[in-house]
Amino acid sequence: MRLSANVKSVGYLQENTDEIIRTLSERGEPLIITREGEAKAVVQDIAEYERTQQTLALLKILSLGRRQIEEGRVRPAAEVVSSIREGL
Image (cartoon, rainbow, N blue to C red; front, side, top):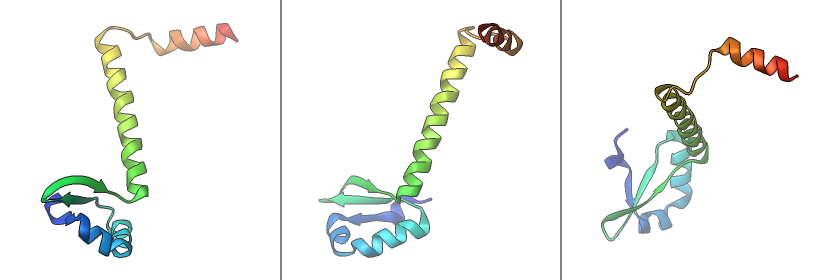
């Protein structure tokens, strides 16, 4: 994905909102909005935004797990299952 191909001014956004929303849904790519020649915002299809948020959440979980492994804060699965069964 080339973000440079998806850059429009805030004026273009105001004048072409319906077309932009339709294009965002079809392509799934974000649109960079500029104001006075400077990137100021990103407009993104809601389904793609939700996928991005889910991916970020999974990456955070993986990062936390990796950190726990590096810190030695792990237990064998059999031990965990056993302690859960004992608690029931």
